[in-house]
Image: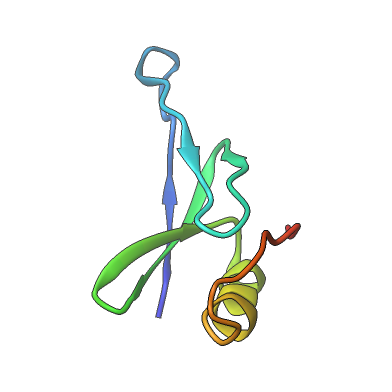
Length: 67
């Protein structure tokens, strides 16, 4: 079960956060979920599902153009 978190709440606390699937920068909202005891960040629930269905099952081979 994941949860939404806000990032960059104020202009002076700017931080760059990257999606764990495709590596793109997340600008405002993070979808956080724990997988195998580690927190992972995604753009949304569909991106998380792609990670679970494709990335984890295919043995993490090759790059994924997602999101």
